[in-house]
Image 1 (cartoon, rainbow, N blue to C red):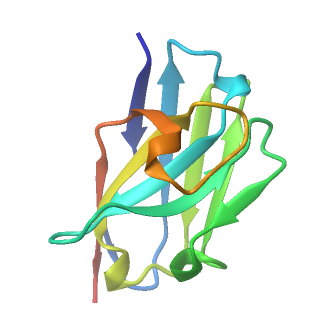
Image 2: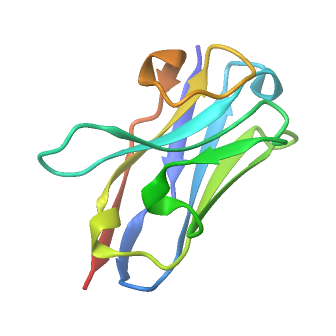
Image 3: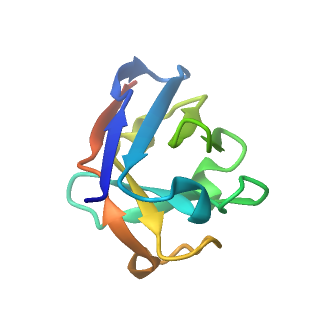
Length: 124
């Protein structure tokens, strides 16, 4: 059974930082791309960042480019999202997901297992 467990969310002031973690079990983690998505209240879930199977390629949505960094540790079966210079508009539930293959895509349909989500709240 594939399981993804996010952690690291919380309440932070604007300009602050948080690091989210996503621990994966039940799958050969190093074979698959990973992604982060988020859903703000009243909005659809949106793509945030993605990383390919070996961490050599990453891609970011424009709103987070230059502020967020996605990395993975294949020895620990864990992916991270370092979020710096946080803004109130970053407030959302953040989800990690594991892809169907080794390359990343921005489409949700490419990701076939999801975590339960972790809340990030940025106060102004």
